Picture 1 (spheres, rainbow, N blue to C red):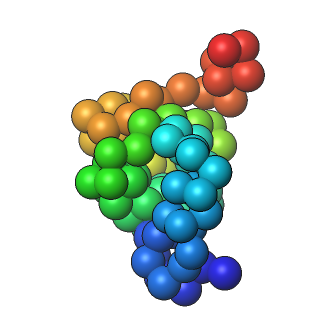
Picture 2: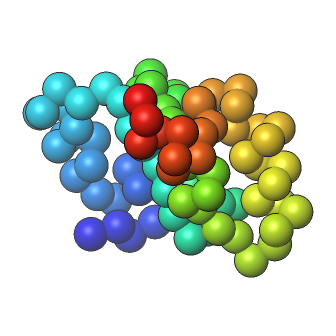
Length: 88
């Protein structure tokens, strides 16, 4: 169960990922500027490979969503559409 903004904080997520040898995370969410941003930053700090599905995320502010997915996230993650990702 998630208790904080980042999916890592207050959860067993990292323990589970490491137990199963998972090093690549694919992120989606309904709060691009909250949960997705916080989880991306923490995952990057923990050296995970990150893919963010831009059209699998949403934010109450469309401009914030656009800036995050086109300007900020590409610095630490691959940003793809769901269709692009499904073809990999």
